[in-house]
Image (cartoon, rainbow, N blue to C red):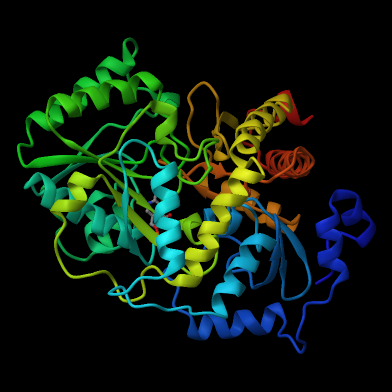
Length: 466
Ligand SMILES: Cc1ncc(COP(=O)(O)O)c(C=O)c1O
């Protein structure tokens, strides 16, 4: 397939993109997209894939990735929200290679310099009194251990979650998950001690007045009926669809759980490490969790690493076997430790906050068809697509997939999710520039208008597409 960006266009766009095109991928011979996809479909088990997926990616630098046919893309998902400083940041890779030459796997019964260094740094930057980290191999394992920790500390099995929650696909995590099709994948009854309260999805708020009060009152009623609950499990900001609670909501929920003596377990697996414009999203709301689950960016994109942070009191009550065999890999810990330095030195939290505002303005300015809501906190969020802005009826899934596939064809990777499956999620590396956002918005504009013009139900066609 021909490269969508010529060398000169890429050079104008970004020096890194130009380099990526100019340099042949190392170590030929290489398989083509077609060959890789044929083997992928035969040997790799995937429960599902979206439009244009899977894409065989052979190289990535910063926001750019290249497929096996040499086509270049801008990855506005950061490799599914993992590569906070972009793909293959040189300082992160250097730290990983340096560690690889010393030792990579150290048993959980023993200690390594990188895991100690990362845990110590996390204690320095984490909210409240969180101090100790139990390393895991990824997100759903962090959720599992975090749930164990709050259960052991509270002596109660029940967990209160919120609508639209996603905390991983393992069986206990699915009990906390709101998505029915994910829950069904457990193929067995889920834990009945998990209860669910409303989430503050303000764009579709069902309350005419006093919404925050009513929303939290409903939460109180759920808890009144659930004496077995000992902890609240939630993301400070929900990554699925970018649900950003108002400050008042979190303040009232936090006061309510303190009054009731409930522990707070925050899932910062996706919001942590700068994604929302602060090191942890808890900071936006002044939250001080008892336990916090981490993963994704924690490994610096090198291997798979998760962590569960606990206050000294909770950590002292934790019992069980040591830790999962492959948890706390020294190479991933060294890369993760380097990533935190990069986030601080390159002011990536500040950039994420500024670029989130820039993106909101740049999308709003275009008056694009079907755009019902634009929601960003830092670089977590997206654009909610509706058929009609008055009724807020979600845009047809088929059209959304068409738009996503068109963007991919144009060399832009995004993903789609949300409580109603109609949010185009845009979560680039925290180092994204305003120029790169302009490129995205130009392509989004073209993809939306092209789909709108083709679709005779588009009520925006007269207003925005003619
Ligand atoms: C908020 C949140 N929690 C948990 C998980 C599960 O993480 P993993 O996919 O590493 O198991 C995810 C993954 O997307 C997530 O976004």
